[in-house]
Length: 296
Image (cartoon, rainbow, N blue to C red; front, top):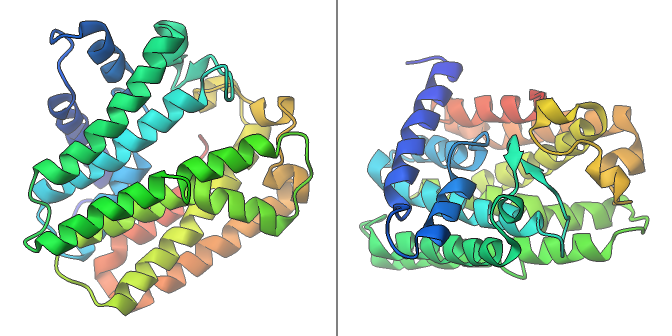
């Protein structure tokens, strides 16, 4: 079995080709929109959500070709959210994944349409390809991603984030925001990967979901620490943006030391949730380690 770095790089490189194939080609009309979609979704990012889907799929014995489509759907939702988040009406950022944001490279109207089109394509993938031998389960997967993306998930978390600028939130309010804004899509990636494989019992799915909840929060805590400590070149996006925009973060609420301690505690809780799965959860454990210990 390959080590974690080889497994990660292998999946990242292969998944990049999957996305290149699934996205509309840039020479198909409307060419500018399709080029901007590819610009925004390809050649960047850690691909954490697809990697989580692949790891959960391995745990559940899922065929890789099925997980490809589920992972792509999640990543397209994530890519659309970044395009919209970076726009002047939201976070107004000019750098993402080490290159100009979509609205800077193209224009605001194109960026808006890119997000809309990437979101639509995600649900097209979930409905066009066979992801489960049980049609009812596949329909549940569509609902799962829709819920994780909408007002009770990622979009709702972003709305809460925008409404919180300049305010001081307590820890429970900050967690509520990030369980939705960041955590919902991470949890969806894990469950979608698992649903592509053998039918797991509800108790097992609940443990995977709790792992996702913990690691999703840990991901955001580490993001806040890196935003405060790392530089723009390392992050590939504008460092210190949250502080400049007077946004509440785990660092502003707790301080760097306590925020890191919280990430470590969430890390351990996530690992505990996987205890019954044994060796099948190896990649999920390694991804939890990576998420908490990453430098970018």
